Amino acid sequence: MIDLVLIASNLFLLGVVVVLFILKQSSSNPIKKDELLEKISFSLEKELSQRLAYQESQQRRFETIERTLSEKLYSMNNDLIKEQSALKLEQVKAMQNLSEENSKNLMQLRQTVSERLHYAVEEQMQSSFQRVLEQFSQIQKMVGEVSSITVQIGDLKRLFSNVKTRGGWAEAQLRSILDDILPTGAFETNVYLREGSKEVVEFAVYMPAQGKIRPLLAIDAKFPTESYEKMIQAMEQGDNQAEQNARRALESTVKQEAKKIASKYILPPQTVDFAILYVPTDGLYTEIARIPGLIDEIGRIHQVLVMSPALMPPLLKTIHLGYVSLALGEKTEFISKLLGKTRQEVARIDSVFEKLLRNTEAMTCTISEAKRKTQKLTQSLQEIGNVEVDS
Image (cartoon, rainbow, N blue to C red; front, top):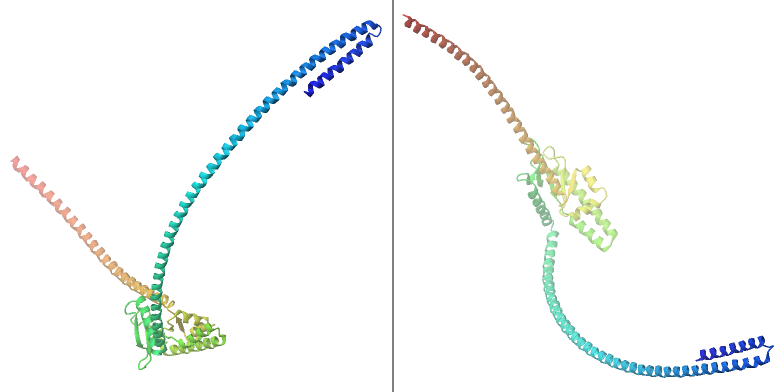
């Protein structure tokens, strides 16, 4: 509507400009000027009235369109409000249904979880109770075993408190090792190495050697537990001074025993030039080996080797390997002698074959001579036959 007013005002101004231009051009003729002005004024009024009428019609049209649009917008707004209300109701109902379904599912899930949890807890409690019962029975059994072990330890303490019993246990352990590794007859027990002497070595192993006389290896088992137990007790209590004293006492005991073994049981050529001091535990041997230079000293001065349950089997296996090597050597010598005899027999057979060959050649010559004579005799007989026929 505002655009139409502007167009009309612009047309009016354009008409005024045209009139002024015409008036300026026709200023010389006043009559024509008045007529022209009237015509122009009439034309402008007519045009203006048409424009105003058109403007009013357009305004009415716009008002009609505006009312129509307002009605349509109002109707659309009402429809949209109704649809939104219906949609909200549907959403509310859907949410209520979903909430009810979720509540039902949650209740079912909660019930299922509660049942499974109750079943699992009950089963776990039963299994735990069963394990507790089993462990309790095992604990009771272990307590009984500990009690029996305690009694056995007490028996062992009483056993090892006696020197003879302690030595007998070490000898039994050494005897078991010797029986397991060496062949039968490879060692003897309680052997008198000197004639007229009361000194008896516990074990004497025959060393592998050629000939009827085989040197012996003396093995004496010792178990100095007093110094060893004092040293272990001092180490557990952290008493360094008591540990050093016990270690010095153990060193002195081992040296004294090695000296006794060297003086009593190393008697070449009846024995080899060294002997064995056997200790029945590897722990005791470890503590002896920890004393600086002790094993080297008694080996260098007294020719005594200290052995433990872990070191004794390799030494015995080496001795057994010596027996095997000696047996192989004896078999090799026997085979060599047998081969010599076989060589002599082959030489004899060769001479026999040579004689047989000479006899065969002589026999061949004799047979050839007999054949030649037989041929001559046959020819003579044929000649005699021919003479008879001619006569």
